Amino acid sequence: MELDERKKKILQAVIRNYLETGEPVGSRTISKYTDLNLSSATIRNEMADLEEMGYILQPHTSAGRIPSDKGYRFYVDTMMQEKEREVIEMKDMLVERQDKLETLLKQVAKVLAQNTQYATMVSAPQTKRNKLKFIQLSRVDANQLLAVIVTEGNVIKNNILDIEEELSDETILKLNILLNTNLNGLSMEEINLGMISIMKQQAGIHSDIVSEVIDAVAEAIRAEDDLEIYTSGTNNIFRYPELADQQKASELINTFEEKQLLGELLQETGESGENTGIQVYIGAETPVQSMKDCSVVTATYELGDGMKGTIGIVGPKRMDYDKVVGTLRTIQTQLDELYRKDDEK
Image 1 (spheres, rainbow, N blue to C red):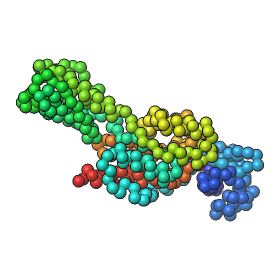
Image 2: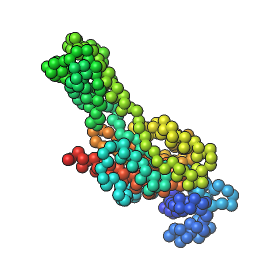
Image 3: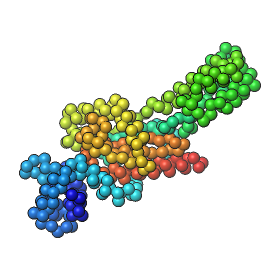
Image 4: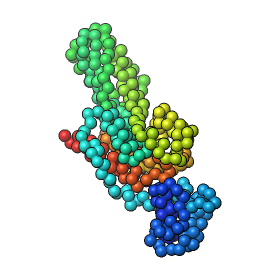
């Protein structure tokens, strides 16, 4: 049985009322809440159909109805579409450019938690398949070289290499040409043993330097695989009775503190997200066991050069989806505009 317009409106009224109050919704409330001008008896019959179809539940015999996961899913997939284009302005958000990305992302997590009153998480941006852009060797002193390694996303790593004897400017120039000619644009998977062997032969007595640079490149690229996550608003969990149970709250807080499961969730979101990057997990849809009583809304943001990260908001299943999605859209837009302006400078 498909939902007709009347059932859709009644379901929408049940969900919105429950989001506002957290209490089961009765037919009399719906008769005042909608513009259908239907009797309580008619609404009761429609609600019985919605319950039979699995969109709402009756927690107790004499109680009203609450949305099921299926009902929330319908709400998110259909009724939220009109909110997709809305961008809610967030007061004073990201007005001034932060000097460090880490500071910026911590600020994003904090402001999101304050704005939504839910728990929030933000992953630092990564590239799906990091590649080398440039290597620059330069002299520090007679026994040390500085290797500057630039990877996709303009991430810069500096490494000090110890050498046995001072190299001439000409030798350093030749090593720079050798390394960049062979390695630029490659990922670690594409740098094979045969290629390394040929480069070491061409470097001659300086083959050890080639080995050290390749080790430094590998370390720089691997460092980008370690997902950094910033969280805020964990204590907001206690605001919602359905999550404030000691065991549930403890499991959720541990998940936020340990961050490993958060990393898996955010990485999965980043890999499977659509172009818009907005995803909603309701109840058991969430791959993290401790969040089975929650809803999780995530958004992918991009800072250019393939650098992508994920923002997540965790709250009760009765969370204010309109506000959450709108807020995430705002963050996406502002981050994009912020970094695009910087790139144009």
